[in-house]
Image (tube, rainbow, N blue to C red; front, side):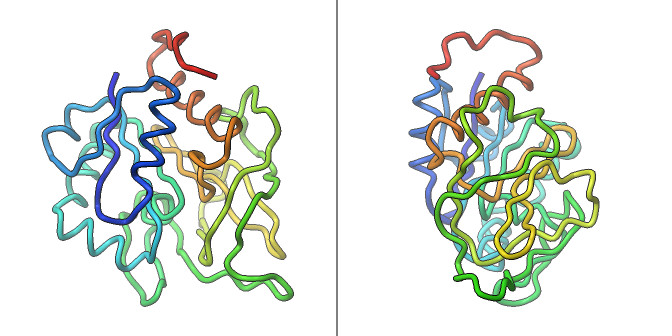
Length: 212
């Protein structure tokens, strides 16, 4: 089993690979079409603005390829932070920009009176669907973001975080799972979420070697 960590020049790919290495999941940081097609899983991490993220994906020719692999071929996909936001229909950071459109909704600035923006640090999430949260040692995860994903289809929201307002913490739909928090920075809880995802989508193949 192999993981393609998408390299589109939006940061934190090395920390994601380090987390996967800890789980003993083979991975490659890549924008190469053949490597992405050959991988068993796709991870789209990222930090930065929605507009720049989509621009970089377009310039690398990755938007069509990712949609083919994830939506048409149903390849298991994890989005992290900006990588979660980019699967929305539209984003507004800093200007209105079409997203990948895999889950209907908009990425808008957090408006939470009395709260500092960005939302940064550890916060407790409220789990609605525990598919990927089984046996999690606590439910605090690490966040850093100024924009959030307003999802139109509530059935796609699997957890929320309260920060003056309810904010979508994770979404999931079929082969897609995405988190606004950083699993790779969320210590054992974040690693356990990743482990659960790989277990579920490995079609019952054993991952007893994963190091948690």
